[in-house]
Image (cartoon, rainbow over all chains, first blue to last red; front, side, top):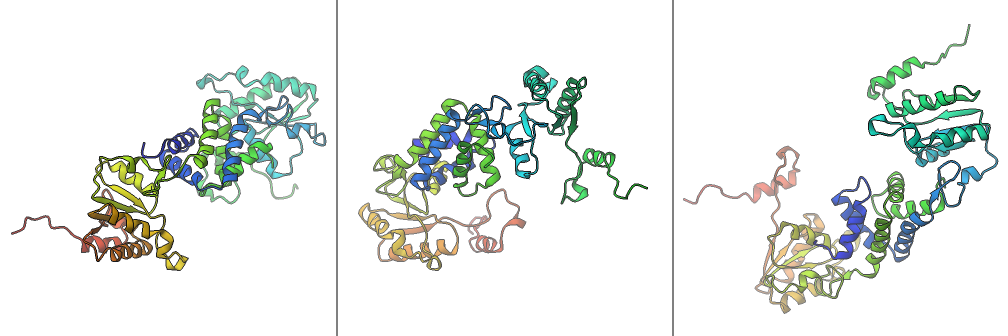
Length: 202
Length: 202
C-alpha cells in the first residue's frame, strides 16, 4: 500500500503470472514506468489482444489467429508425418530445430489418473480421427518422459495398434554437452538400453 | 516467428523490461494467455495507466497520482525530519519499516563524475531550498553506500554546513542474520570503526 494505487494494481497483475513473486512484480512494475510511451501502448494492446485475438487452431490445437494455425495452413509440409505434443509451446521447440517438416497435434495435457485426467479429457478422439482422415503414415510421440507422458504414449500407440500407422517416440538419453555425472539414473539406464552401434556391422 | 504475431509482440514487450530475456519473456507471454479475462483487462489497463496517471510529486519527487504524493499530503508527519533517498523505491523500503515518521526527498540519481552526472543534474537546489523553507531540523542521508553515494552525501552535507541543520547518515555495518564470513572487507571495516559500546559506562 506504499505505492500509488495504479502502481499497486500493476504489481498485483504481474503477480498473477506464475513464478513472479512480490519483489519481482515490484521490480517489473517500476520498470514499466520507465518504458517509452509507444512501448507502453504496444504492451497494453498486446496483453489485451492476447485474449481477444488468440484462439486455438481447429485442426491441431496450436495457437492461431485464424481458424487454422500457420503450420496447418502450410500445404508444403509432409502430410505423412504427425508429431503429437503436449502443448503449443512444444511446437515452437520443434520448429526451432528447422528440420522437421510434418504437421503437429497438440493434445493439451497428459493422461494422469492420479490427478483425475482420463484419456477422454485430453481429446484423443480428435487425434485418432485426424490420423485416419489425413492418412498419416507415422505418428511421432513427443511428450515429456514422465509417468504421465509414458502412459499417454502407450495409450495412443494402443489406440493405433490395429491400424498400419507407424508409431514412434523421440529418443531419450544423455543430452549433448552434459557431464555424464549430472544425468539421473533413469536417463542413464535408458541411454544404456537404447545404445547405438558405432562399429560397422560385420 | 514461430508464434502468431500477437504472441510474438507480447514477447517483445516483456523483453523491454530490464532483466527479462528471451526464454522468460516467452514464458510470461504464454502465461498471460492463460489468465482470466478480467485479469487481462486489468493488466492492460494498469500498464496503460502507468504512463498516463503516474507522475512525480511536485514537492519530493515520489511517485504520485496527484500533484502531491500521499506522504507529502500527510500533515501528521514530523516536519523536522527529511530523509534523502535516491529513488522512489527507497521510500517504500523505509515506509515498510513502519517506524519512520518524517518526510522524504527523492534526488533521482547520485553524483557520478565518471558518468558525467554533476550536482546540478540531480536537482539538489530544490532539496536545499526545501530544507530551508520547511525549516527541517535533521536531514537523514539514505543513499547507497557506493562511491557515488558517498560523494553525494558529502556534497549535500557541505551545502548545509553553514546552516544549523543536523545532517546524519544511515548506519552501515554487518546486516542481521548474516554469517560474518560473507560480509565484504569494506563493510567489516566500517562495522569495526563504528562499533558500539555494550558495557555500561564506568
